[in-house]
Image 1 (tube, helix red, strand yellow):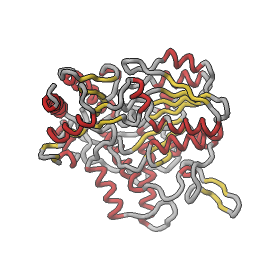
Image 2 (cartoon, helix red, strand yellow):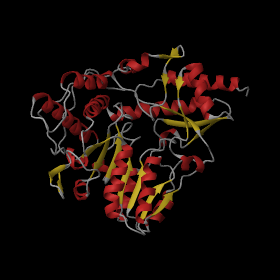
Image 3 (cartoon, helix red, strand yellow):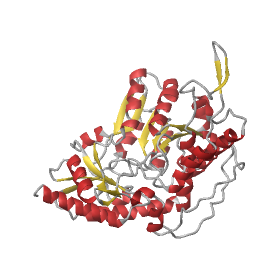
Image 4 (cartoon, rainbow, N blue to C red):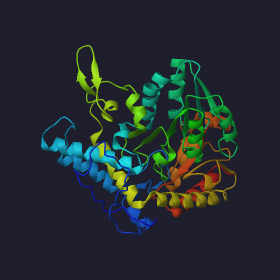
Length: 441
């Protein structure tokens, strides 16, 4: 990587307000250049920990990433020095908390190149963001007989909400199949689009196969067919440059905890005209303009969709995570992961009886799912943890239809991020050889 993420300077507290037009280029944070991987790893206190007497090798960033000290500090400083509820207080620390939360919204909007920060809705996670669209936009726009297109590779969070919407409305679901090598059947997608769907929802990057789908092409094709498009960006936004204006996506959903930020904070981006037309998702405080006993009117964007006390500390932590990733540069983040993925697949293929699922390295992000002979993935993950200190995920990865597509009950999954070293992949491979010895292959 060619930039650093040390000692991030906060942007001016009064420089931006919600609704500010973000179309003009913004200056980068000043920062030194060319950190080593050791410099980056030094920012993550958990990586100094040991498990079972061995250095922690964390290869489960697709599930949840680790947090740099700058994110931890940003949240601690909030709790220690200006902990207060936002938007309603006229006293100093409440105004400071409000300003910090809204700065995080502006940072997030810039990170994905949203036109305005009011297009950024804070939720609990990507799952809640998708459900918000399914209930608010979906209930208002999807009717009996309407077609919803999604794919066989979706996380349950981008499948179950549409099943529920179809059950409520009488809509029907169709699915884009996945090839043996983990790519979408775009020829079948084109045929399905001829049926004039109302909604297309798909993942930008598979959490199981690592497949990076051609989102810009798929969105343009869906729009040409008259469909609204939601993209699950939970895996793409943390790992590669995502520009919502270039994509022309209608809705984009992602989570803070997968991009160096805290749990409990997610994002829904939407085109402003769609968000303005949508009814509220939940009722309560802060999403209202006026309340009478029998009727209410709604607040402006983004607060119309943010009922109740928001996750203030988590939003501030997300803003600090965005600062960190911006300082590294998302092109560099993606390049680092591409190198790691290519190296990992090359090394994993030296392990006898190991099967990798999904496309070649150049078509995927930093995710490798695999099986090893007849060893159950849960047993394999346990051995890797106990014997060499490697943390990998094992299971169906909240993608049971995709597992069924490959006639699998589960896989083991290694995933990488900004702090992952090639030496850790070597440790994974050593652990896999040890597992084969334990099971006497």
